Length: 151
Image (cartoon, rainbow, N blue to C red; front, side, top):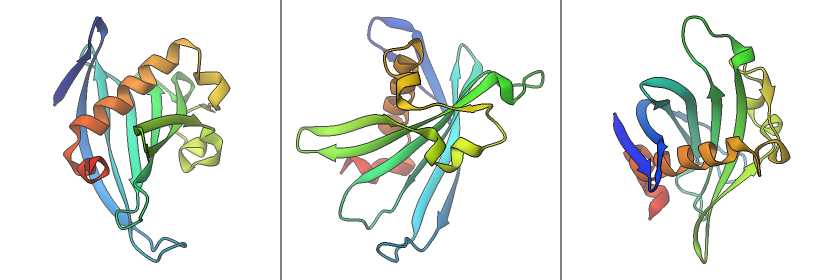
């Protein structure tokens, strides 16, 4: 597992455990295959989120969607303990950018693993936002399967 800690924020020391990769498609816009990778995020040795990153490698735009299921995981947990969050990734002239979007518009929004799909207003400005962006940063910087998004 890879570990990252946000400067000055030891409570956000996170680790990721890469899962698997799947090719899907074709993309209805360009006809190319779409890639999806997934894995888990750990905080204090406990699973705190599952992540799914989806993008089409041969698109001219380097964009992706980071879908998260955040909350408690383990044998004694249920969907009510977790919520889904969706984050759009774009490369702008100023650099990479993450923007929370409505999770209900994504497949993660109807996952049986989460009890609720959060919209942007439910995440931004609340305590969950810092964790969500820390997860996205960790996955973006550390998961080698999505390295092409950095180029």
